[in-house]
Length: 120
Length: 300
Image 1: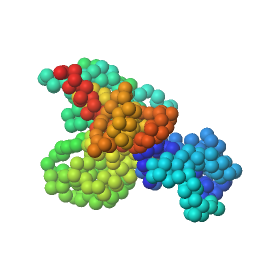
Image 2: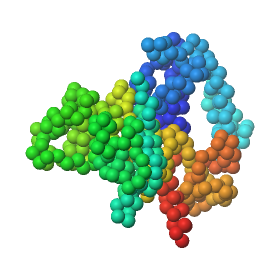
Image 3: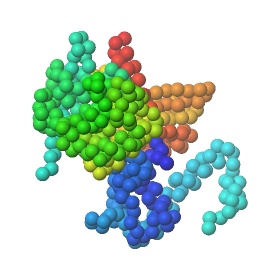
């Protein structure tokens, strides 16, 4: 689940984000503690803490003193907006690079995308 | 009262055995409250470092401060240290249960319930004579003492000789759980770098008695990248960079270089190159080899 390509704390933050986007973590619900994340992913608690802090700084999570971390209201919508922005660099550009390598023309590529179904 | 003094701090630490220099003018501060990996090849100086820092051996030169004091013959310091060695000797007639009975005399934070749970986890026969234990069971005795002692400063020197993969996983899991609840300074020396990479917060690599790396695990993970692609394109991209490792097959080259920033990464991708991460273990192997090559060049 953890790979070497990215800083681990960033991967932890992204996994929490994914859970918020998918609805597995609802807004205003409590997220697992740093220690729970650490023991689940078998990583250093400081690293897990850094991932959670990243989301607190972004306003995605907020802290209730003495209780724990919660998903902020509006977090899901903000994450979707952010992910749409990075969709081009993260997915579209690599797709085009690979298509060029294989000699797939832009027209063929766009036909492929249409055939595979439009995003719902 | 919080104690902000560095837990372990050495400067100019040198240790010679005859004409062998085991530690060569080392300056090092171990971050308090973190799990630090002390890594390096056999004979690099890891055990000597731990021996001198725990007052079990005298330094030839340099200064050592543990909890702000000189550790040698210093009960005030040594009572807060747990040092689990690779081959701990016990009296001949001792059984594991005797070890666990004695442990609380030396460790004020000893948690007998935790020790009992660990004995269960490792399925350690506590009534068998220690000489009759398997190598793995003997290692389990040390691991249990190291964890249940909850010493503010705990050293594990290659603690798991003979422990199988299942037992090692138990060790890592219990270590992480207990450390999360009872944070303390832990120094773990091991050759199984890939296994411990994610549980370390800081890493120190010793090579030929000197410090080769001293940085956060996160920094280390980002400190190198492997560039893969057609030989010509790779060579053009890595020109004027320090190459840590190079390999290739046919027209394909794979070269490990130091950290790239975001712009450089984009340049590489545009040049049709692939970027692959370098695991902590690969990084250390490559840095050690690159340094060995530098030494060889100096001597030539």
